[in-house]
Length: 113
Length: 112
Image (cartoon, rainbow over all chains, first blue to last red):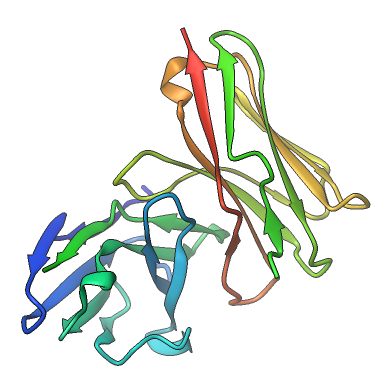
């Protein structure tokens, strides 16, 4: 099983809203990632968590706030987003037997109005 | 500076023929390479990978070739099927907890 799940699948929010994206994996992977992907572009790394600690923040604006409550869960809290933040937000995890491979979730399609 | 390059933005292949997707990289410290397939509005799906200690890895219809001296890898799909139509991303990383570096992708269209 190489499943990474993400909720919600779609999200529409206003610029003053607060919302959260959720990611879950039960593969025992200890590295988890948030990516942002715009149309016709490759995924752009936002954050990396390793053993539930934030290890990489790719200079992401503070209106995006990641959280790793435990080894299976990764959240991305959103507040005061801008329309240009509209994108596909992807979660990935890595570890276990195929420890070099990142497995991606299906993504959350976010639209900021 | 783009460390992973996919110079062909698109490729069209007839059903049943071979699809060859190419990828070049500049960072000689990369030691693990992956190919992902992506449909619109979905997350990338892992296809196949290769470690820098190998020059070929095969999985069913998919074969990845690595030429370290040329810093080049390729993905061969044979026979190509219409369901293979998607965007294919090449990615590479160093050892350790380093991020994946993605190419810009190649859109493959397999024509029936």
